[in-house]
Length: 225
Image (cartoon, rainbow, N blue to C red; front, side, top):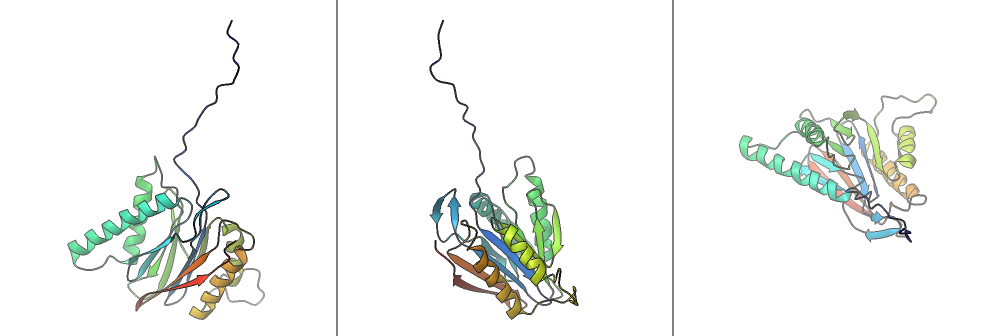
């Protein structure tokens, strides 16, 4: 009788990996702010300190991603190609609302093997309003004034609820929108605080302000440890 000397292990292939990082969006009256850090990690290893998670899809729309970097970049490539096809066919850039629906349809079309991403699409509408849309991996879409996704979202989202949505504030107008300077300060404070508690968020902060004049990008330094 053969006596096994070692138990047979089962190797399960997993196509997904969470590479960490955090993204957020804050919508104002005539602008929208998108912010994301640049650290890409795998467990306790830092793969790179500068891996962008936010990308311009047009001069009025920015896509921010979190979770799996590879799936996020592939999703961005698909949307960028379709936006270019729209431009060549109609001789005008695709609008933010149309891109929002296109993103939802694209995610839903992959529901049997989803992209491992939780996207945020932010931009300016045809009438000049700032909007932000949050998604799950299957394409369910919600119009929001503020949202945070990623490894530090449990820290950032309550902060945004209080500072942008004015939750748990006495005598606050819940319909009031932040100014650009206020939104910028809130975003920077959110990431500065989250890097103290989340090892997967850090290195550099990319800030995008989208308004009627286009997309304005700024980069700031975060903690590197």
